[in-house]
Amino acid sequence: RLFAPSAGLRLFAPSAGLRLRGFARPLATAAPSMSMADAALPTLEDLTDPREWLEEVEGDKQIGWVKEQNADAVARIGEPSDKPLYGRLLEIMESDEKIPYIGRVLNGLYYNFWQDETHVQGIWRRCTLDEYRKAEPEWELVLDLDALSAESGVSWVWGGSIPLDEGPTVRKERVMIRLSRGGSDATVVREFDLDAKAFVAEREGGFALPEAKSRLCYKDRDTLLVGGVFGEEEMTDSGYPRTVYEWRRGTPLSEATKVYEGEKSDVAVSGYAYLDRGHRYELRSRSITFYTSAYEVRRPDGSFSEVPVPEDADIETFADQLLVTLRTAWLGHEAGALLAAPLEPFLDADGDEARRSLLVPLFTPTESCSLEGSSATKSRLVLSVLQDVVNESRFWRYAAGAWSLEQTVRSEGYAVSSFSAVDAEAGDAVWTTTSSYTQPTALSLADAGSPLEQEPLKSLPAFFNADGLKTQQLFAKSADGTRVPYFLVSKEGLPLDGSTPTLLYGYGGFEISLTPSYSAGIGAAWLEKGHAYVQANIRGGGEYGPRWHQAALKEKR
Image (cartoon, rainbow, N blue to C red; front, side, top):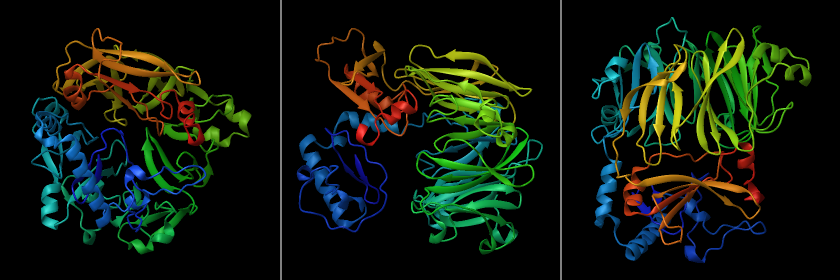
């Protein structure tokens, strides 16, 4: 479907499987008379795209064209809402049978943002863990976006919260809340008091940022690190913050002090300060391109030092450790590796050989094994690993300055289990989410020290009949000899003679790995009919690490 957001229009492309991503910019271009079928695709020799005029998504001519295509599609395939299946799928999509995931834990209370037919814009609410364990928890309302929207006349969309963290012994009672008008990229950011359950007025010293594509965090109780609200000259060519300012409470935003600056050609520039297991950090980063960055970190003497890692590496911290994820080979370690080193000695090291001696490999990729991601608790780092796209989790413990691999947990069959910290600063409790093509998503509570001892908390109902369905993993050989994995979900005993209608899905982009997950829509609309579903892990994704992604870039695609 192609959506024209302001008009509620839809365009069906039933045979194309077309996916459109966000447009870079609106273009005031007249609509050509040619039809989409007549339009030739751009080539390396001729980059002209006759479809470019459609990028002005709210233009009258563009919306008129969408209406024409909708009418043509409905004439060909019929009005979808007239079909019995439409009502069933709509019921599934609008079902209140959802898992109320916890976004963050503050002061022992578990916060959730929730939307349903009553709370269209949504409510931010909280409860205790004991209350959350109940089938129907009694939630305490913190912020009602529907009421706020009605009061202000603006359709506010939730953009998340940024807490003031002054350490595990200090009560967290302030957050910055992001809200956008109708879901736009630009947000308004206002300080919120969790005890009073109200925004802090500017006249009372509350922070408030104007509508912009801003980036911010608390440096301390009375200081924000902020960018993106100082005019076009302070933005990159990509439209994101190019500078970082320190803004003191009680002073005009115009008096904020510039502390860091990137290049106009950068994608974005950020500054962030945080506490990490007793260690206070302040980092600055330049996103040079989509996949390359440069980092600086504040040293104990107050100065900033460049973090000497490859530009295409990702970094994070864990207590006093620097964690480095590689996209290209470096210092004897392969692309896709995860390395740890004590941060201060690493920054002080004289040359690559000295730095190499400090690196501890926490993950080393193989031809069939890649790192999908990680999650950190107070004392453990949980690695999500794909072995031929089959999920497993590896639990590393950090204690007394040393890393040790405690255990590896493999999912049953082709199910995917993921672990994420409940409150990384407080302890090792983890949320465990489990799902497969035929198993509805379930949420449990466990401890990273004993992850198999799980307390079931919430689960989705079965939205379709999965009896007799079987999941297989198979491999197709590409023209260049590469084995490409795919999952096949079908009835037991499926005849492999081409007679079964099969829906094939692939993505292959942005290092995103397609792993098994529960899809009520595919199950109800397709699998229940006896049809087959195939999910292909084509190159361009992240199923086999950076090399799998890089194998489908530009001319390689």
